Length: 218
Image (cartoon, rainbow, N blue to C red; front, side):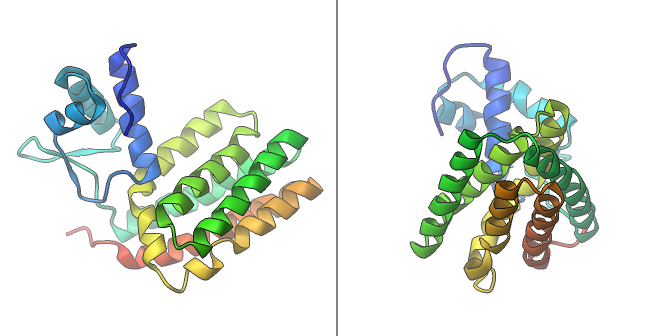
């Protein structure tokens, strides 16, 4: 985690903590200790506390009866609902991006895809997950739909803590780039429907693996 500069610290702390959720920097059920987070980011406890409270209000974090703050554990029904919503909105963003993406944007995505393949071959889960996030959001940003993009970020904030579990699934890893290659091929053809279908396939395949690691509501 990078040290934060002194500039609107409340917003910067909020953005940094939310990014940790999106990127899988926190684990499901993890308790977040204000003082430790403040030390990690090199700032006082006040902006961290306010950022955590903001994330609790958005239900990206959960406050327990003892006032501790944790990364929520998703029930199977909640995860299924999130998956269905992700399929709808991320598929839409991909379809919109297909008609807007330029040559430089496409090259960046192709390079990221190649990096993901190298990470798989090197068994580097951390690099793969970082590149996977970069790959998806590079596409969604091309949609030119900031409201939609913010919705997707919120959804990833809920599911992000579970994504590292993907790389523990032996049956998923060898095929984890299959849908990504289809997405890139469809972007190269400017085929929005095919981009959408491949993104839907990608999310569904990952969700099928992750759903096996969910805790019951109790």
